Amino acid sequence: MYDKLVQIALLFDFYGQLLTEKQIEIVDMYYNNDLSLGEISEQKGISRQGVYDTLKRAEKTLYQYEEKLGLVDRFLKQKQNMQKTIEMLDELIKEKEFDKHNMKEKLKEIKEYIYNIS
Image (tube, rainbow, N blue to C red; front, side, top):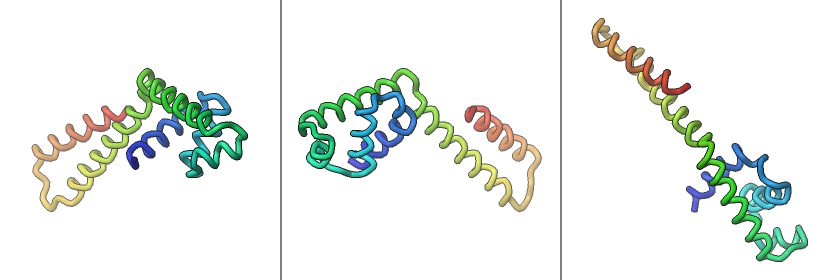
């Protein structure tokens, strides 16, 4: 369940403004404000089933946007490459002795990770 919450939160951050106003409100209330379907239906004056249907339709739309555009996937890969680059630079900084050939290879590897970030 936690994975889905994080996944929807990321998708909503990237694509939320492409949803209808009603979908934005319901997704926000359900995932960000942690309200139940019953609480949302009470506040919005619609049936619990209506809230559920709107929520599922919004989730499906968010997944479709990601499938077509891939912005979240690209963001996560960039974040991962950035972290790996930082780790490699930290390793270089910590080295006591510098072997010129080894240094050159590590710098090439770091360059490749930086290239993959963009």
